[in-house]
Image 1: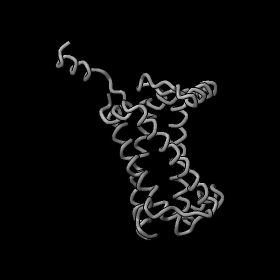
Image 2: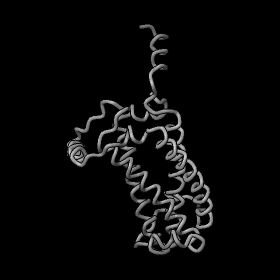
Image 3: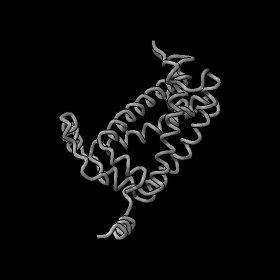
Image 4: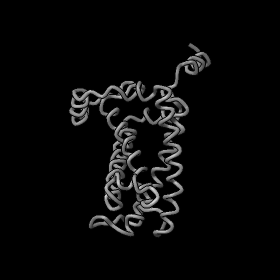
Length: 206
C-alpha cells in the first residue's frame, strides 16, 4: 500500500473521537483549569478548612480578580458543557462509549490497575474504570455548576440553594465537587502520559 492510499484509507476510517468531542474536550479543559485556579484564590479569601492554596497555583491575584476570571470561565464551561451533553446524548456517543458499567468489570479493572496490568489496546474502547471515571466527572461537573449558581445567586435561586442545604452547605458541595474534578484530572493526565496515543487521538481524532 502506498503512502497516498494509506492516507486515503485513514481518512475513510471513522474517527475515534469526532471533531465535536475534541473541540468541546479542549474548551472544557481550558475552562476547568481557569475555574480551578481562580476558585482556589476565592477559597483563600474565606477558607472552609484549616489550609489555603499557595499563591503560585492560584489565578486572579486577589479576590476581585479571581472572581472576574471565575465568572468568565463559568459561562464558557456551562455553555460548552451543555453542547457536549446535548451532542453526547443525541448522537448516542455516551451510550456507546460510557455504558454499560458493571460492578464486576469495574472491580476487575481496578485490581488490574493496581497491578499496572490494565489494558489500553484499543483507544476507541473505554475499559470499565474509564467509563466510571468519565461518567463521574460529568456528574461532578453538573454538581459544581449548580452549586456555583446556588452560591452566586442565593436569593434569586433560593430553591436551588435550598436543594443544597443552604449557602454554606453549597460551599462544601462545591469544594468537594472541585476536589473530585482535580482528582480526575490528575489520573487523566497520568494515563495520557502512560498511554500517549490516547492524547494523540484527542488531537487528531485518529
